View 1: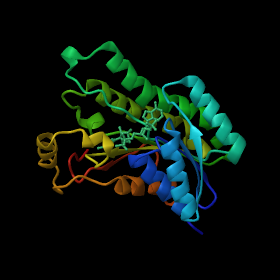
View 2 (view 1 turned 120 degrees about the horizontal axis):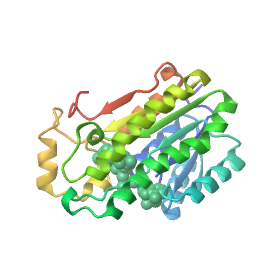
View 3 (view 1 turned 180 degrees about the horizontal axis):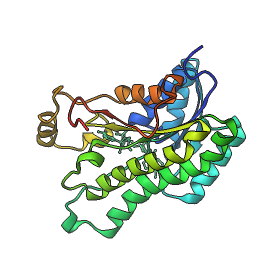
Length: 248
Ligand SMILES: NC(=O)c1ccc[n+]([C@@H]2O[C@H](COP(=O)([O-])OP(=O)(O)OC[C@H]3O[C@@H](n4cnc5c(N)ncnc54)[C@H](OP(=O)(O)O)[C@@H]3O)[C@@H](O)[C@H]2O)c1
């Protein structure tokens, strides 16, 4: 039996990057994957890619910055698949600028999308996991949530907040056979980091003992492990996947 055979997984931000790679990985391991994000065209491409490989996936519209959208999305996923057993809170944005010049909306947008969205989705999927007496929540945080980063006060606060959310939900849900963990990527080659200048990339690579950026597939592998039966006794943990950039 494949590690995620017949589990239903909801992956936010599945239209590209780490979310897409995670959806592909979970589907390849036998999960039915609900692909959620705003860009329906890109989601449809991921859905087609999974179907072509013999997997099961369906596209759902989701804006994690909107509580109504979150509720509607989870309702539609439950109507289609009947349950959500694995939730991957991956959707995230950056609005980088030094704190002195950071506008209130730069702060609010990042916290609403990266942290409040993850909390509301966890809440919306909890009932289904409680009913199943089995669940896996995996929050994609970041190395900067552990170290801080100049120019990223909003982003680092949202990612540090996700670690606190992970530990608190882990304590609340441990007795119900639901684990809650975080994955903290270092520098990963995706659209999010493509905007960095070569100078910024080289400065970051110099801080990575392995001397290279990571791939979205390497993050997806860590998520798939935490979502599997093999990780049944791991909860409240933040798994660093960063090439040694930070050793907590
Ligand atoms: N790349 C890195 O180096 C790195 C390092 C540490 C942590 N991370 C974290 O990993 C996660 C994925 O990042 P990535 O590198 O794959 O970034 P990405 O390529 O920019 O993808 C971000 C994803 O989030 C989705 N998203 C953004 N706002 C959304 C919203 N309001 N509602 C629904 N979906 C939304 C986007 O989909 P739509 O635009 O279609 O909605 C997209 O699929 C993020 O949480 C990021 O903070 C990345």
